[in-house]
Image (cartoon, rainbow, N blue to C red; front, side, top):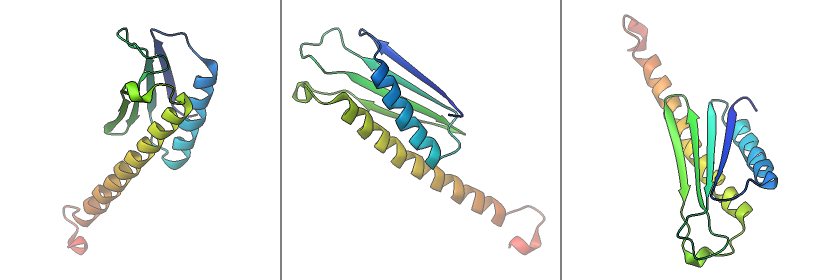
Length: 123
């Protein structure tokens, strides 16, 4: 990967299989969007937790000119939800948001080319 992937586990022990899965998902995003500068992931088991297997999960991607965030704060109904499905769904949402950022950047670049000061042909 050409960017830093930072993974933090709060109130729980680190899990290598989760880290490997995150790396795989991050590589997939990198193939779709070359401008990713960094990725920060936080898994947290809340202190007030009364249901096993429920995690707060946050991902933040740094891209040129923007930060893209996805947060999952499950309810008690999500008890026993597969952590890998949770990660996959969050990264699918990130991919959608990256597509929107990429489209927005293309529009800005196209508009900038149309209005080059002093360029009479652009008008």
